[in-house]
Amino acid sequence: MSDTILILNGPNLNLLGTREPEIYGATTLANIEARCHAHAEKLGAKVDFRQSNTEGELVDWIQQARDTAIAIVINAAAYTHTSVALHDALKATGLPVVELHLSNVYKRESFRHKSFISSVADGVMCGFGAHGYVLAIDAAKQIAADRAGKT
Ligand code: DQA
Image (tube, rainbow, N blue to C red; front, side, top):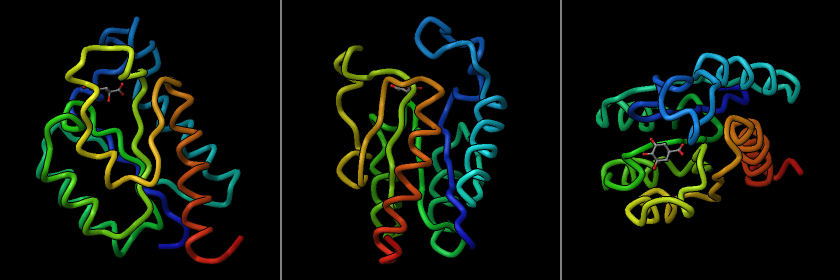
């Protein structure tokens, strides 16, 4: 498991770069993944970076993370606003959780203001675009270290 942070991306995030770039930016998910690996390496950590358009697959990965990761960063995309299953899965892991969004969801439609993830997350980060992933790795690593009494 050694200091692996699981970074999960939900539906439609595979389209980053071409999907509403005025909201989500022009950076592709592959580019974000590369940035995450580079940043984690600087911290002496690793990332396991995944994307799925399927809710159940995300649930399976969260369940497996118990044995493989020290923390979870999750951009659940549209499932943020709908998924009790992701809420329950995150609650059950007991791992530190950072909720992440590229856009500032609070500046957008009201249906994006409701999150099923926030109440089971240690912290929430939104509106910083692709750089938010780097910030979220820092936060996740720190929360995991604090919990392990390593600080
Ligand atoms: C998003 C915000 C969600 O409301 C939306 O459904 C997404 C992406 C973001 O990263 O800004 O797909 O999670």
